[in-house]
Image 1 (cartoon, rainbow, N blue to C red):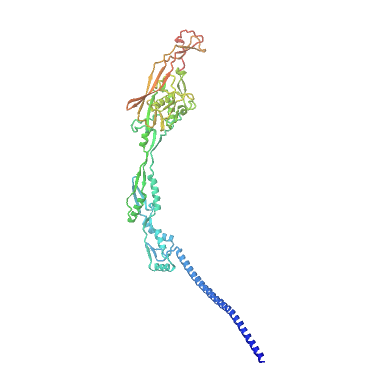
Image 2 (cartoon, one colour):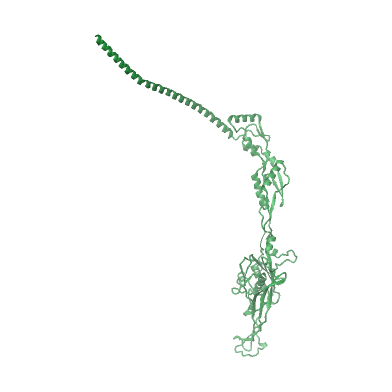
Length: 549
């Protein structure tokens, strides 16, 4: 039993050891689990604490934000109210509780009193100019002062603003208006003044003087009768009769910076007496004198119609019409003058009258519409030669004329014979023709650039050669005549030959001579109309049939 118990004890002991070991192992393993649980519990507590703290802080922040927002709203409300705070005065006028427009109305009497008497007399080269303060932009600085007054109690934090508003209310704030210069207004005034005075210089200019249209029936052209220099000597330069000259005008350049600076000084000193305009003259680049130096009367030529049949009224009518059509013709460099183009077809329907014209190769005359216009073309031809322009086409008459030297005439015929010449200079040519009925003369004046340095005048030389004697008398049988009746067709006329030259003069001395052309005027034998079968019988004077006058 004892052994058994001993074993049992041993066994129990062993079991106990085993259990002990087992417990020890279990204990060893269980210990970490216990630490994890403890750590997890601490983290939860910390998290809860943090969350609580954040919640509290959030509430605090929200509270502060709400307060700040309310303060900012109140601050902005004060800033944007547009109302002047109580206690503000401008020039003794209380404007507290007013808006800007209301304050301006309240101060209108003050500003009007400051501005109304400002008058400044500006002296310039164009005379005195009176300008008001309003013209010049001299005004009371009400906008500036009201802006400054409006800023009171509207800067800084709310408490600062409220403190300043309270201080203004208790102690007041006074502002004083002063005169100031609105530069936009004064610059506008100077813009207008510059236009009025002529900031930009104006160059001289000229134009052909317009004449009234002739009132004579059928003329339908400028009235060019008796337009020479006046006998009273009131005008001595023909150019002043033929052209309208517009005088140059110097410009006035205003020194704006100096003007504004001086005006500010005047405002500061309350001095509105005479004010000299700071400006300089900008001269025109082209004067009337400059124009006249380049626009000269190169030549004036006249021919007379005082003798013989040249002064017949219908012929004078045609010459008057022709001069009125040519008057004021302008030829640009390289441009050609055509007598027939300017005068047009000479017909009764177009206002031309019947007057003598050369026919039958110069053997006779016949009344034709426009008779006499060749005196105009011949006068122009001489002027063109003396002015040294380029003659393109000219044809002499078949018979020598009485109003012009031999070789210096130029015939024209509607649609058949023209007189052509070209402006061969670098400046325009101005052509003026007119008729002097008092002295019975036709005139042509040519204006253009001056001659060069090599000569200053041209004379025309008409050199007559040996005449051409008429050949034997011719008898022309005419069926309408019966013996012994006869009729003169044309009297005998000798022919002429002229060589013409240009003589170039410098200071009255010939420096060159140039041949122009040779002009031949046809001779004509005496010609008689006789009866059919005429065999040389004497023509008895008592049987002559006179031509109808």
